[in-house]
Image 1: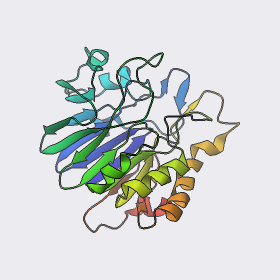
Image 2: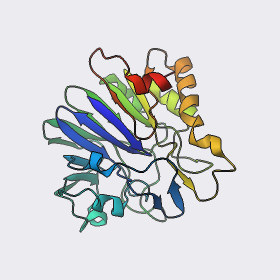
Image 3: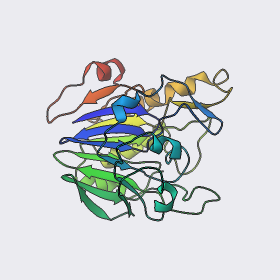
Length: 262
């Protein structure tokens, strides 16, 4: 299994010969927020086999980014979000909610609960989800969420890799998000073999970087330190946007992971 942290909540998961892309945000700017790291290598995310979208917020369901994918990849979206992706050049679009299960290209995909505000505007619209993607390994993609009790149930079924948000794109985050310490607490419930922090270090509001530059790099390092304290035995691999790692039954961290691991 190979994972590439494209940036923010976008991860390319290559599992059992299937290329899965989560929450594609591929352009250099959305709204008043700009990408502060190298541009996405669009060739690396073309020809994906499946797109997973966790919720309808602009930094997770980005319509211009979906148009960039080409080759009409099928997509799985939260129940009620199909209309938001109609006409974007995707292949078949299916909806699911927490507890729903689908089988695609040999992978077993389950919608999981996410404690995050719904909709796209005014807290109205599709409820967010996370995803458990299972083949020869099991990968939990949390989307955006706060802590919730059901994480223990997810962990009891076995998780090989947890993709956990540890921040956002602004100077503060509120309810419905994991910060580094809460993400480490989530690890104590999920107990994956490997944890990869996401949703950090990629986008920042225009003009704010010079006042709070540490928020581009600090959250995953705090997460790694807290994880070592609260979830001993879980390997944390911190990937910078654009970096990849390979995870197997008894794999060692690759060079990128060794540079950043706790």
